[in-house]
Amino acid sequence: MKVAAMNRIPSKNVYHAVALRAAAPAMALLALQGCNGQPVESQSAGSAPTEQGCEPFVIYAQNRFQPAGAAGRVEPSIDAAQTASFAANQELTAIGYIKAETPAYPHNDPGIQGYLWYLVQSNAGLVYVNDAAVRAATTEQDPTGGYSDDLGPLVTSDENCDLNK
Image (cartoon, rainbow, N blue to C red; front, top):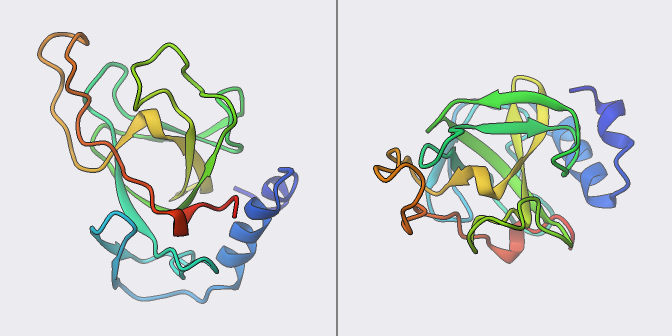
């Protein structure tokens, strides 16, 4: 993703994330402790903590329901251009999240309605992934074909990782 494209997003926090990524030097493998307590191994330039104290953290593209996987978008909106795709159970490194005023998927079950957009690193640069499409750990396909109440392990979000603050 081009930095210029990110700078068009009307959010000081998105600009902060772009600046963070651009300012951080290339790093070797780092073992970090993420917001949800899982260790992170990162080789990318965007692995420095935010000003709020959020260390990069691991989340996984969901494999619980069809369609499995997650989409990476240029803006925190389901209408934004998709520039990355993540396979089911693919490990993603997030550097924070933005909370939306309205859910991306209002008809989904509570917990996966999509209020949060995680800023994650991809081959396309920094992209947004909706919280309905990620889990805190790898998951198995729902054996009931999408009717299970078991949503899988949801990602818990640390206030320090809120890029709106």
